[in-house]
Length: 282
Image 1 (cartoon, one colour):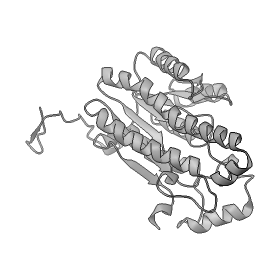
Image 2 (tube, one colour):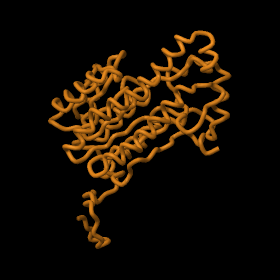
Image 3 (spheres, rainbow, N blue to C red):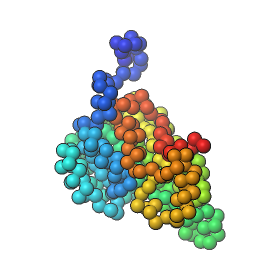
Image 4 (cartoon, helix red, strand yellow):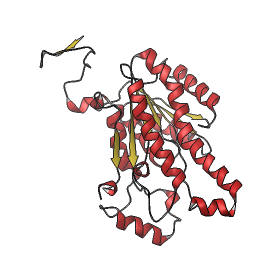
């Protein structure tokens, strides 16, 4: 049973011990955070923010190494930051990487951010199927394998650790595309995958009740190097559809991740935080 002096109300589950100062609630000092897809974009900025907040961080990458970045962050913020190469679609490799991180960081992992993902850039599904059915199947499986199974593999591997510890925060990167169907680009595979990720975390939140929390952050259009070479008319169209009138900076996403990773969100689970410039409000 839990009981607070403020309310005098007893509950079946104990209340968390929260710091007195609100800024301390957002501190990650002494915690171990694991971030997939940390070689660039949102994942990289989240890893940096967590290090700034005092966490020791495991940065996952697949193709673009972050070994040098990890070393620089360690020295700059006086925390331990290590890089780990792993394909999120390889179930065994993910399990082995999670266990190695646990070993390297003193036997625990407090935060897992399942951020790695790929987009769909093949246009309308039916047109691609009519043109090349085999390619259509291949591209569909690629998006679902990375964007859904990658999150599943991360959750499957970290769940037992959270359960044994009795605590943990799992944060997956969803998307506003899990809430709406984007225009003018047509991307049924990506939209499907992100909707699945959001609902997966809602389901995990219920399953993990009592020992861990699970939430998602759903970004809108974010300005990354990948968008630099996009059709100018497409970018203009995106800006007209976003109430704030522009794309986001990757760094504008990190506040939501920090909130969900920290003790500021001890009563938040099964939630999705939209950071989309108001796109889904229209």
